[in-house]
Length: 292
Ligand SMILES: Nc1ncnc2c1ncn2[C@@H]1O[C@H](COP(=O)(O)OP(=O)(O)OP(=O)(O)O)[C@@H](O)[C@H]1O
Ligand SMILES: [Mg+2]
Image 1: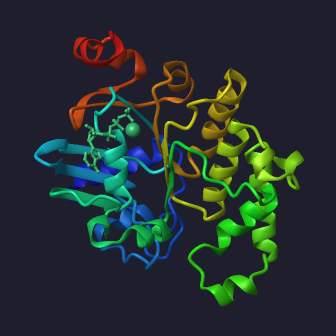
Image 2: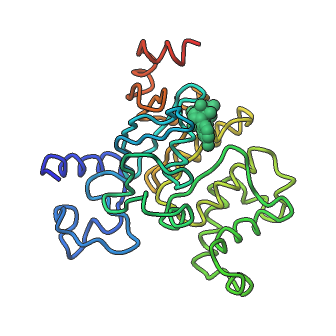
């Protein structure tokens, strides 16, 4: 890692206002300690300004290259929007990051030390990468509260789950998340009785209970009313900084509300990247996507 890259990394961390764990006020000298810093197990090392790093990733399905030499990276605390035509490889990219699909080649790192290709899907979730699929998958028979509580029990054994009780820190977090996801007034409602948008928020809340460092959200506002979409934009802006987010969406007005950097995927690789205005003015983007 060159000094240039280190400085750029530090600038990116500052720009996104993130508070990368363990970088500041540490005895090891904080960010300036750079590569000499010993990383703590379970901690994501974002010293180099990247929480997620993909390089030359490819995957083929029956000879069809769904992802083709894809390279991109995301800064800690960043809210990155991903757009692109149907079949561009957006969902497949998330499958690769979360360990659902193994790429044929390439590099996928979480921070600068965790090689995600060495980990299984469940391990990746435990490392701090939460994923929201398009369809809400909440437990309809349970209340909002029970769904959130259950999110803490996942990955625990049967016995541990039976005797599981929220400690006070977890109760506080649950209460805070209820407010964040606009469901504080619906704690005891059955999830099955919530609106589509509320179910989506509940599922995001369930992910937040596990305090993920990186959240991957695939078409989160699809099927939402305009009002729900607006509230979701607010929610994502609240989460930004505390978490890093990768949001795939086709809804351009939603993207306009939340976006900083937008990455356009096409044919499995990055076609363009920049502000929404920049990519919307790009002839290649207009041709393959926006001008349809
Ligand atoms: N498991 C799989 N087996 C075979 N082909 C697949 C598999 N997963 C994805 N593909 C193909 O890879 C391509 C990329 O699909 P992907 O779902 O990633 O696109 P997308 O950008 O998410 O599109 P959309 O906007 O419609 O959700 C498509 O042609 C799809 O048919
Ligand atoms: Mg998709």
